[in-house]
Amino acid sequence: MKIKNLYSDKPVISLEIFPPKPEMPVDTIYDTIHELADLKPDFISVTYGAGGSDAGHTVEIADLIQNKYGIDALAHLTCINSTSDQIDKVLYKLREANVENVLALRGDKPHGISDIDLENSPYTYATDLIEHIKEFGEFSIGAACYPEYHPEAENKVADLKNLKTKVDSGADFLITQLFLDNNDFYKFKENLDLMDLDIPISVGIMPVINKRQTERITQLCGAKIPDKFKRILDKYGDNPRALEDAGIAYATNQIIDLLSWGVDGIHLYTMNKPHVARKIVESISSIV
Ligand code: FAD
Image (cartoon, rainbow, N blue to C red; front, top):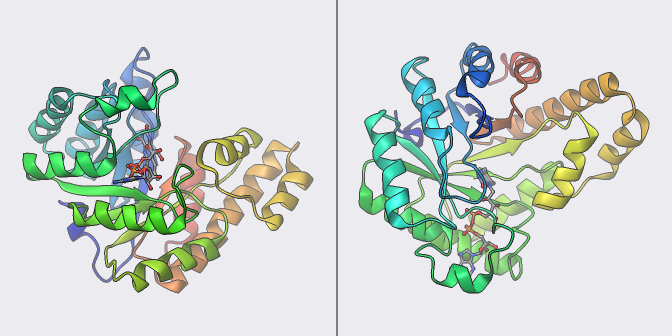
């Protein structure tokens, strides 16, 4: 089914996984998928290798989710360093596998590639990819959005305007970058409402269960760490078991607040840890 049609009266619950590295056998992720499928999410998304041009295992895993487990698969696709032939090759493979949903992304700028190199690329922004996929036809297209705004954006207003262009070019639904303070999402949503930007949004939640993730959050996506989460890190940072429990509880509380506020969907960044996803999904089962 096309993901845009999943958003109706009930919040959409989805899970995100990342494929094994291209040089690793794909079957190293089979147990993870099996366990996540057992949670009966509305869809599972599969990330695409950073730097573009190589689909790695993304298509193969999306195919498995769609056809072996009968769960709608969302294949991420980045365009930053790709030719249109490379993009089409992936789209044809997805179409052949009956995967109907693509998350269209620009991707992060690969190290060693300058802005000048990118000027010659057929795709500068996710919008260019969305237009291409739209022309290709038949896919429900998702796109990324950033409640704390994209780190490269000139300013918040510019980022919101760029998001509007992205939606106008054909995105059917949005998935947010992770955030640890729900107020950032509520303010962001208010701005979208002021712009009359009406599109289903799944909020991305990452349970932070180890210290390494904190570095990833601050360095890679620029999400801020609220004081109440800093206190958790200070107190339990050196106790992996306690930090995992606290991280799961923190994410669960965030989700309960977001659901009671009335979000369209929750997208859980599982980090390929089914036991963490299970604890969260089971603890919200009666309120979705
Ligand atoms: P864009 O929408 O193109 O935006 C990038 C920047 O350009 C923003 O600052 C925006 O304001 C600006 N911009 C956009 N349009 C214009 C314009 N017309 N003129 C001037 N400026 C403009 N990365 C991966 O490599 N693989 C993945 O699988 C992956 N999955 C992700 C899933 C989610 C839900 C999210 C939130 C991110 C994901 N990423 C992934 C990371 C993503 O690729 C990066 O955040 C990247 O830096 C931006 O991608 P985008 O599609 O949001 O880009």
